[in-house]
Image 1 (tube, rainbow, N blue to C red):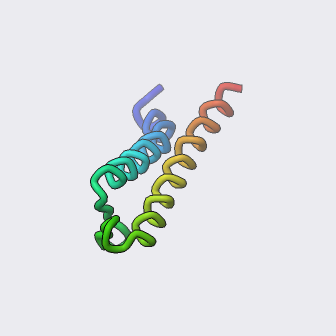
Image 2: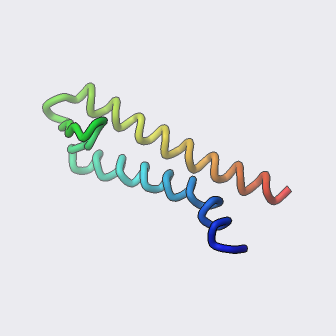
Length: 76
């Protein structure tokens, strides 16, 4: 298996882990970089903070599940 195939296969896992890592970091620190470079804080604007955090978690989980689907589909 050459390098472009590895990148094509594992890019979804990379994006999923990155997104979930960013969500975890934001949950611990209370500071989240949102859309268009906006920073939202848990104490100042909780609705926007938790909404953006939910989006990060959903996309991260979706990317990881898509990766697992692609790996399973290619093994059959």
